[in-house]
Length: 286
Image 1: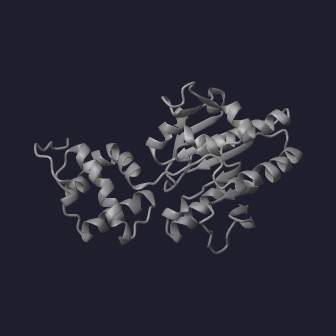
Image 2 (image 1 turned 30 degrees about the horizontal axis):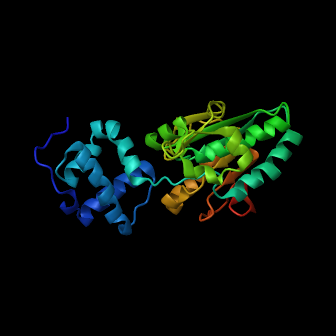
Image 3 (image 1 turned 90 degrees about the horizontal axis):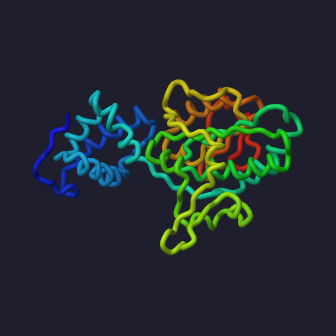
């Protein structure tokens, strides 16, 4: 049980020592693989302050004791994940990747393996714009190529963003990045957009995606080992080089020979004996 405190502390003034920040950093790295350098101390303090307020705790030490306890690991860890991760997403973000998917990968797949289901994995899907972009493009390809079948797996460590993704409701301004023909077909909007400035994904598109929580630090991924394409973009920026290499090798175990790995445009793969060959900017083939 968490002890309830009567007084409401001024969270911005609570002490957050370098020693305690280091303890949090080591705990977060060990459980989530996320590397927090000293420059992230103020950010972490601000985000954890919200959890102290929510739980009515009086110090960061008290919160650390709770989150590292057996009860905290079970009940609070998802909230810590949500606190330390940043989830920025847009439809068709880094569009060159989607162009490569539709112009190169899908035609080659359909020509060689038209009788097999195409499998794609959005790892670190955030609030869902990436897998919904995939779903639009794959559905359009299927309409033009009868018999083409596909499966989309979408995972993230954060249960909070997965709930948003499952619901498929977004601010109206996000629709601007979706091509007009796809917008009409796959997005719904209210008649009075000023009163209800949101768009929602049509149900038939939402049903094409399987959403699941997954921590890339886990020793075993409950994911098929014959995936054709993995998108893991703007996730490796949180990891140090050792963690990046470990995750990349695990991805390789889940990709078919000749499968593709996409990473973010600000990311690189630096490792010895890499199982991947660089085929285009931030696009790698097993």
